[in-house]
Image (cartoon, rainbow, N blue to C red; front, side, top):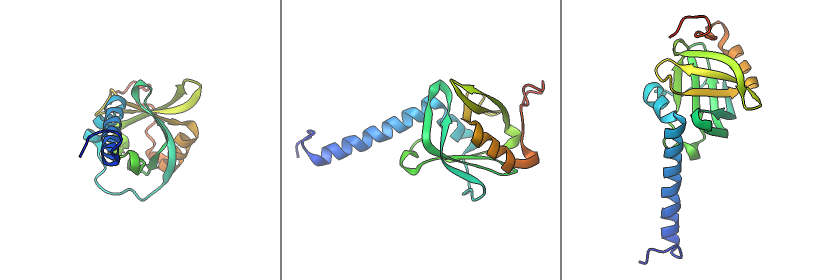
Length: 152
């Protein structure tokens, strides 16, 4: 069997390998891989969820319309659409490990989430979604711990 792009099997194999490589590289650059090592979800999340959301991580890594975000009194849940899941495990981060504050990412109003175990990664979600998470979380909402002078 000849290994050229004219061979359909080779093209499919090449495309799959490229897809996996790009997904893993994005996970490493953006920090999702690091978050997954510290906060991998161990059970399915069934409570308040918002599908097809935008998320921004470090180095301007963006996940446009491909993230599911959930929240309850215990923590924040995030997962990537199934086709992009390679290198992106679902995450569940307890509120005691999160600090949140409003801000801007370029011209978009966002909520910025910082994490105790992975301080090098910041998750940014659009303001409307951040407000929905705050409502769903109720009194467990962590707010901006760093601005209050109490670091994690």
